[in-house]
Every structure is written in C-alpha cells, then in structure tokens.
Image 1 (cartoon, rainbow, N blue to C red):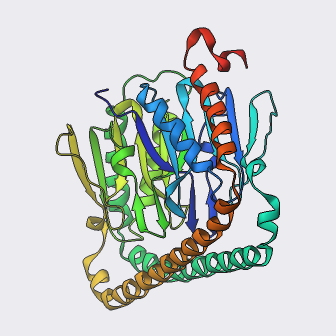
Image 2 (cartoon, rainbow, N blue to C red; image 1 turned 135 degrees about the vertical axis):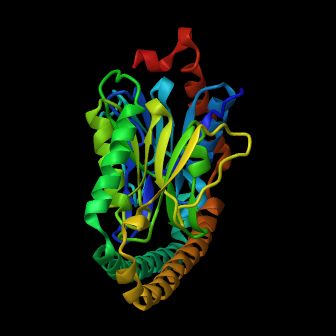
Length: 379
C-alpha cells in the first residue's frame, strides 16, 4: 500500500506518579466488537501473538495501531484494528485488565495454561527473589523521577516569574483564532483520545512522533523553557477544537502525565507540539509539509528577570537530567531482571501448545476480515 498501515503509541508510562495507565483510550469500547485480554507470565508469548496479528492485519491493508510497553520497547502492550472493532491487550500487571462483558465482547486468553507448573515451582524461591528485585528497582526509578519533579517545579516557578502574562494572553488569543479559522466544517460528535507519544524507558527517552504524525501536514512547534506556558496553551487548543466540534488526540507528558506534550486535530491534519528537548522528532524528507510555524513562548518573558535567575535555572538544569538518568538506569536494571525472570517461564512453556493456541486465535481473527464469514459481525 502507498500509505502506512500502522501507527505506534504508548498506552502506559513510567512517570513521577509511578506507572500511569491510559489503557482505557486504546479503543472506544462502545465501538469494540471483540476484545481479547491476554493473560500469562513473562515470556509466555503475549507480545509475540499481538505482533503476529498486527503484521497480518497490516499486510491485508487494515489500519492497525500498536501500543508498545514503556518498560520494554520491543514488546507490545496492546493492538487495535478499528475497522474490525478488534482490540487485544496484555491484561497482566501493572495494567491489570479483566473482562467487563465476558463472552459478549471480552474473551480471556490464558497462555499460562501452556506452562509446566511443576517446573516453575522448582524455582519458586528464585522467581520470588527476581520479582522482589524488579519491584524494588521500579520503586527507585519512580523515586528519582519524583526528586527530579521537585527540581523541575523550581525551574517552572523561576520561568513563570519572568512571563509577561498580558503578552502571553495576546499570543494565545491570536493562535486560537488562527486555529479555528483553519478548521473545516464539523461533522459528527467530537471526542478526545488521550495517549502517550513517548516514554521514559530502559532505552532512555523515546517517542513515536514520526509514526503518530505521518498524516499531519501543518505543524505548530512550541518552544520555551519549562514554566513558559506550553502545556497551558496546548490545553487551550484542545478545548477550543472540541468546542468547535472537532475530535482531538491529546498526548500526555511521559514525565508528568498531568501535562500535555501535543495536541493533534485530525480533521485539519494539524499538530501542535512541544519542540524543546526531549520532545524532538523528525519528518521524512519525502513528506509533504504544508506549513511549519514556530511559536516561541520565550518571547513573552521579561529578559531582565531571566537574567537575574539565570544561575539558579542553570543549576536546576544540571540537577534535573542526572536524576532522570538515574531513573532510566533503574529501569534498565529492572529490564535485565525481567529478562532473567522470563528465562524461567520460557523453559517451563510448552511452545507447541502455545503455537496451536496462537494459530486458533489467528485463524479466528482472519475470519473476521472476510465479510461473509465475519466472526465479529456475529458478536
């Protein structure tokens, strides 16, 4: 196909508040016909199954959404094929999900049925110790992020003290007027979807902006230090678009999910996003960009005030990033522990039985892509 058939997201994140879930936004359950909730321990094949089905759906031209794990960028937490009303999710901790409409919509697939319980029991102590170590490393990671958030709050305070709010209000008003003018006539009932574009992960700070923004042709890049008002402006854009009758995609900050990193208005193919590190992204040279506008909120800051607090802000910067780096190192160590944990389960799995179960599920899903044999239509 000429057009990309996949987009990538994160539905959960390692944040200053611990693990934060946005799994409720993987799909609108009112529009979902079939939700497969996959259970099982680490290394049992949950992510592999979702990857196989995702690849098959994309090969057949179905637009597919893949939701990656913030604690392991190579693994999937979920999958959605909107046109089929099909959703698959990893239902294990920390994003524990259970069937709310058992049989009528939700089906639980337990890959734990395929493991040798006795083999796992022989390593009960080792498994318990690895789980304890893994949990402790996540606690430390979140403590470092919390400590970093205290430093960042001081940065925000110092920057906010320098802002000329009358000038910021004027800039915001002009941008909102421009945004509304560019919107096409509204159709249908507007809704908002909230996800993460990026994650604080064992691989560092990562994001999927190139995938998420593949259909966007107009970019508004918001620059300015923390405290300059970027999140506030993005929330105003979100609210304005919804009030004008248009659906929006809202991407939360992977560090502090109370804040917004980007707002996408699909109807006008427009994205507003923070463009200061680490919110960087690249656009393919082959991509047609209609407009790209930089919105520099630092222009609303009083220079003499910034000059007076320059040393304090520099100190905050120097303290913040090492703390984030320590959090990433804890996540990296947790990933290594998780890999050791997976090894015990992999050794105990009957992968022939797993393959049979996967084949049955894949066959059932593929039937749903044939109109005259649609399993989903019968549900």
